[in-house]
Length: 489
Ligand code: G6P
Image 1 (cartoon, protein in one colour):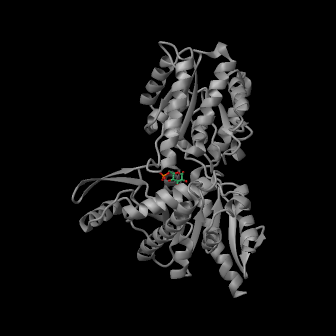
Image 2 (cartoon, rainbow, N blue to C red):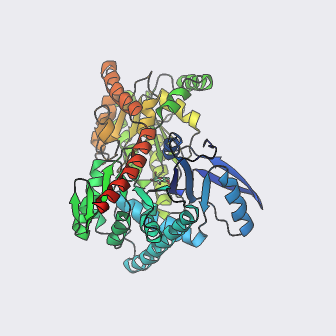
Image 3 (cartoon, rainbow, N blue to C red):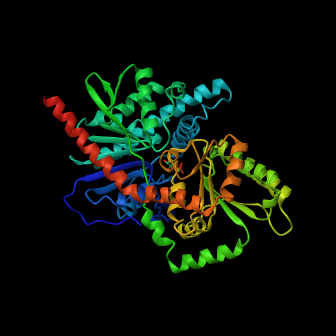
């Protein structure tokens, strides 16, 4: 849960993200049930004690009446959250449309939508207009709450226009922007009709951050090739103004996982699961049901492994947790059907009357259930086609202190750059290679497993989400100081 701090004179950090870390359900005219979600970003910011944090974002519900808006605002205030209200049409064009149907696939190298070109062009423009409008609504809420001296940290591809909207209103604001997805090669970014406007809007920020050095480099290349600006080792320069661009790889709060698996009730649950799967090695996939996660490719690789290794039938099980996401977007609906079809076919082909090789769940697990699964896993299979970072790989490592299982990890996940030496890196498109990596992982001698695990465990426990957030925010403060110094000189 979010800790509520007493009012102090500390500098304030306004965190602006599309989604608040709270999901709200209406229980009556003026009554709301709020549920906190403790994702990577929340736990990262809980650790920052130097600043007093406020969250600004969409509450994920459509509220049209004034009583509802007022009561939700009051309820969220206790959690230090401030809502941005977006109506249904806007959510459809901005969130389902421009964010999740255009930017998300493009930034993950899946290209722009290719249906009926004329219709796409028309809807592209209306989605882009809605995107700008939504970003302005976020900016309006920030402006209402801004107090001089606040630091503003904008998050992710939903809010690329926000730095521009904010600085146009008040050029003295300290504004940082961080992208949680990959930033693609400039050759991909240049296919986007609104490529220049988006880059220019982000460049208005004082500090621009990415998970990896490669993403930062791609962004700088896009600015030099598409906008004709100068790239320097520190960032991008435009008429003497430098926007600092750098890599800040995120981590997790490892202690939360390490402590959880020591709890008596989780130990009991671990024992139950071990009995349930006794005699079989457990392979685990945990992903949002998203095309970037490469779930069909992963399952096909597992099928190939079963085909090539009849000795392993009945001795291995793949548990695939596929958390439903963005279910209003047609591409996600198609993917769900495709995955179900493949899983059904493989279970029909390799299952028996008593067992199936794949347990596929279309739902999320609670935190403790997830930790127990991580702890009993022999091989984690994370084969994203592209992924900004992928913290499931970090969470798995944190829960493996006693088992020392193997991590098979896509070379296209940002985490491959930090866990590459301990994991088995694979190209998820190469089903033959993934199938043989599964065989290698299942047969790996204990000594090699321990060595690989140790490497990853040291990394995960020494690069925490808290440090990530602290580094970004303190650099954001320093960047401003530097900029002011340069102007004075
Ligand atoms: C990714 C994005 C986040 C987003 C999350 C869940 O990790 O980088 O910004 O919140 O997916 O997606 P959703 O659309 O449900 O917020």
